[in-house]
Length: 202
Length: 202
Image 1 (tube, chains in turn yellow, green):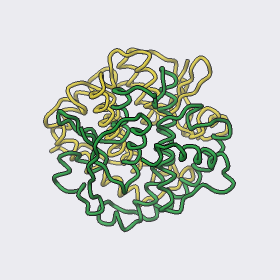
Image 2: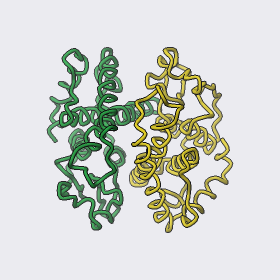
Image 3: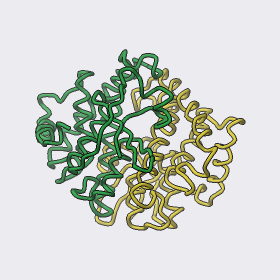
Image 4: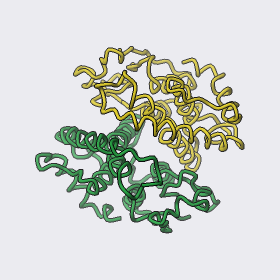
């Protein structure tokens, strides 16, 4: 078993933090995304969508998509649970996890991808959309600050995958100058707490 | 228990098809998204992101996000399993489900949202991005046709939530003139099969 990883991208960090929280060690193999090795024909046999991370199982199965990889380890190593326990809690964690992806990580990622030179010639870039998504991300941060007024973590009183997604999204926002504002005190308090966990360095 | 629903949008159909496959009946309450009732202050108490569908449990809990609602019912009514069984299969279904969302449903939805009058004044529209995403969606369909050369359903030999997401995405593509091409015979075969299931009419 190994994970195709990159230290230079937010999604692989999501899986590394998740595994650190679980106390699971998996060998990592670095993929040079700066040289676009992930977009070459060899890597596309592993993941046709060209994304990292990818988990390779001992039987040769490749599991792409960060949350699918996390889900695999939640099933094999249930403790501590990071997707919730029981039907209602699992659904609420999934709701928050998806909100953090759709309304925070996706706008923050688009703010970078849709205008940065790194993706020039790699995707169809629309710089005007980068700006629209930057504004959407700023709005999402303001909203999330109000949500965190009444609870410790994104999905409730327990640390979950939704916290990991939100943390890696916000940390990746720095490259596009999207940051927590001084008045967003709930968000700042939450970010300080999740960032102080040993897993955040993974 | 009830579900805030709309017959006019693709995501609520995702949940209706899922429930039909499970044989679960839940009362639906229509939300008038044409009149933007979902964007008003009352509905935002139910879902601050203003989206439908939303599941309301008997204890008053609101679960938004289509896949979170499906996940709830997968836990309460495991048969037939639509998210896979066992760690590896569940991870692979999640991978395919996410690929269908990120590379098919999202581009198809953006092709509509980013330029259609329906969303004017409701979101930050960038028509040029609608066109970029239309092209991305066309590429995704061509790729999916090759994937379906060797298997019956999106994630393997069993019908799963990934098939539901792909079906509602492709059917929603019609409003943006994104359709299966005559030469995409594997995709056409798959689409005919999933569309012939009674659940497709839900």
